[in-house]
Image: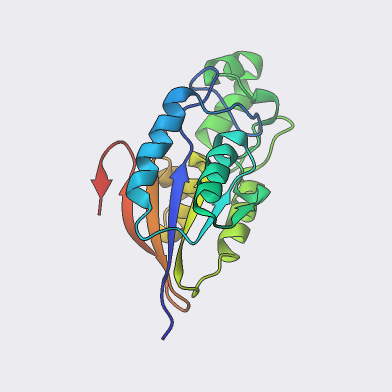
Length: 204
């Protein structure tokens, strides 16, 4: 009998650098609090034990994922499709700073990110397509529990896909540092959201 695959998706913790900026391809490391946040979440996620760890290549995800895989002696898969959207010329700027630099373009992006791209950045359509391509390549139907370490934007694309939401609606889901959710994946069936921990609360 085919068994469901469990997928736990974990957001990285806080990072070194300024908070509340456009951070996509930029690659800061986790700060001390960020590591503690992720370790705390990992303790609640590792049941049943992970079979494999998958991760974005960005250090704020990769370093923790690699450590978890190494400590457990399980495979680590690094896939650039799990990376955050590329904010182009606005990387590491606050929205206020980006508005000051590119007022009209930034306002349109903030209001309709699904329709407009940052200068030299990635469009939402490109981002959405690559994330769902990675999601569709998951080994559904293989018994086991997989951990994916990724970013808030990636998590919202997955949630909007699983729950049938618009991306605008998914943006209203709070995903604090080290937030996580768990899915049940069974061939021939729609994914099932088993739990969502967004801001220190659990919605089951």
